[in-house]
Length: 268
Length: 266
Ligand SMILES: Nc1ncnc2c1ncn2[C@@H]1O[C@H](COP(=O)(O)OP(=O)(O)OP(=O)(O)O)[C@@H](O)[C@H]1O
Ligand SMILES: [Mg+2]
Picture 1: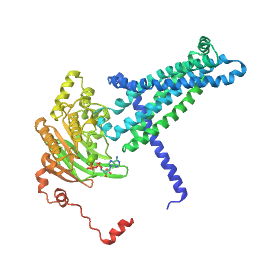
Picture 2: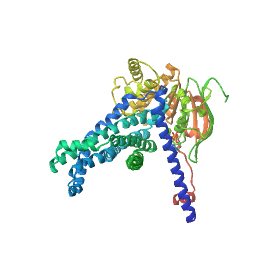
Picture 3: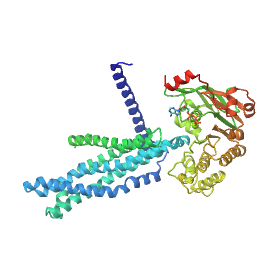
Picture 4: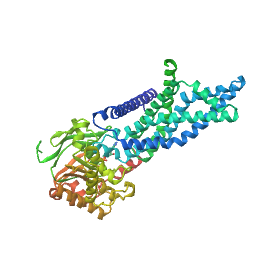
């Protein structure tokens, strides 16, 4: 029987080794993904256009309804919460500022990212994971086709385009939700609200939101694909990895959000 | 075995492989002759699929050399190996067709990726390949709509897509009814006769071995038990080979005390 100290150190050691291996695997995937997406197309290995378009439809176009509904509701909620405070000061028109800025800078990107992580991040993990389990990934390699180029690159490009696009859409719908509520319940004239929003928003508010959205797209793709490629066994593991991919990508999206928000706070 | 023999298209020397700490293949050496059907035979779990994965470069060995057409593939990088892979076709144990694509797209995939052929040419070639394996008319089907035997045939069509020099089959007839299995064996024999390919088949089905093999390599407990022609195999007097050929179960005799200790778990 090993002593308690031995088992404690053994436990820590094993954890550290497996963590290091995960970090190593993940950085290799990141490296490969960026190589096959940004470098190799210029060396005569073109990106799979049709697969990319189909991923754009699956990840972007098909998320439009849910993004619309959620953003609309959040716009309304934000307007109500803002009115709750601003009413005391008789400054209800500033609801437009609050809604506009919080949606474009923060809630638009993060809500969209969380929806896409739930819909597409999990789908990436499940797709790649079940291909791994059925030896399809091995088959690709044996045909001389790089699985990262074949599977991950189209997803990455799709999300890098669609997440910012969805974010713009979410911004618009959210602001519209705030406008509708203010018009109906707070008796603010729609034109005034609109003017107030336009005046309060700076280009950089929208741009920083889009930069975040772009980064979230990268995070979601990498996490989903990483979990998919990690599958070794069968269907049961695919399920586990899919769940793990959603949890990990939402977590990382928030970590990156914190990072970018801090960065933009000081440097813009 | 002579090294660098031009009649051998694949030569394996002192190959050692392990998963973690467990050694699966213990320093095995053998050669696979050009233009013949070679069968790799052995009991379940003896490392046949593992060996095949090394030949096609999905796994890197712990030590040892694998020469393909005289070039050592274990020291190649991915790009160099991909050049070799373009001359290989592989049928996996579960066919491993891409489930998101139709049969046509599956068979066309290697051509689309590695050649600059016109789409119309590719269409014609795909139809020829599917016809070759007896699947003409199923091009628009998805793998999930096919039976196991049809999937295996489609897998062969895909493996043949680039008219390869080598074909590797992992258990082509496993899980198929005897008639379908025999049909697949016949297809493999025809491929060798017509296209003069070097074909490596992993199997443990004896009827298949007798039908398709020119040469046999038999693995047992991670070592090469036998390498030679089919006739030599049939004539062999080795006890373990005879057991395999005559389908006798492995009889490990326990004394009652040992058996008790074994089931008591110590
Ligand atoms: N990914 C893996 N990780 C760890 N061990 C493995 C792995 N794959 C195979 N093994 C082990 O290696 C040994 C050889 O496996 P392999 O799949 O090569 O057998 P096989 O000869 O193809 O068997 P079968 O005829 O049943 O397909 C087995 O004992 C198996 O437990
Ligand atoms: Mg096997």
